[in-house]
Image (cartoon, rainbow, N blue to C red; front, side, top):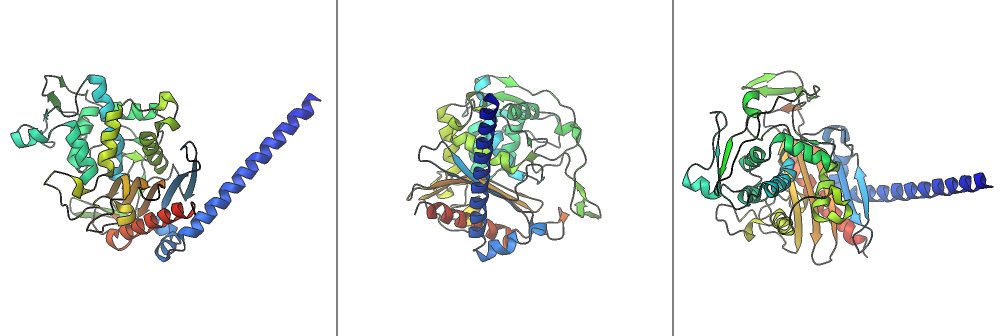
Length: 388
């Protein structure tokens, strides 16, 4: 009798899972069909081998923001792409966690003293010193994707600290191994400058060892010291930040209640607001005169692509973009303040037709930016369509 009851329960459970999977598959197919009604998206998605597109979209299933429905196109966590500047988002957040741990204020000025001529010191002159705070670095990261600002947060946080903390939070396809936009020998890459803070704290992260990673060949050729090397380029010691981890991280930052307490970030509510403010800010809204205010939606690939001019202030895009070697990525929470609809959208496209790295021959303008603008608009329409 008992055995029959268990068998019945297992049957009902299996039936429920089957119905759920069928419902998800149908919804996903409908979403893909909707995307492909856009001529440009249809053309690109039908050339998957060339463009290697991955897309994730998540929207709320309830008004209480407790359940998300996810749609995807060719998303694979073990399918490598170079994450470029998208790693700046988690680095900014983990740097704040470490600052809290050490009692360092985000507006406290600092001087970075390097022992290596290949990697310059920072903050030693009065102009740089005024800009040399964790808060200012984070602001620059989100407004103009400043590489040196990331590198200074990397100096402060440390590679091992960052990677261990991300693993503890459950991000298994994320690993930072190097600074950005600087080519450094291993001895310099593994070392850290001494940092002296305004209120007297002095710190220096321990020198690390070169990570050993499997070779990861991509492409057909690459440029090295002005010479063309006719072989695949090794990305085995490059940074990693999968699309699934990217979307999960932005969800964690904006909706921590979706995650167990032990997997939540150790930042204050004020710091969370600070991060979200600069992630969603348009350049015309800053008081800093150094930024090109005419390129209002700079760094907002979704909806705007590389479009100049004024942005729609009723549409907030909280995001972090990345672009290098022909890989273009955007990871965002998009919020329509008129309709009240919002959704998470993360995508990557590879626009390197000749599959040659470092030759600066990429189809960013012709294919990449228009793809992101069209995808953002189409997903915005999908989210609004679902409410009608």
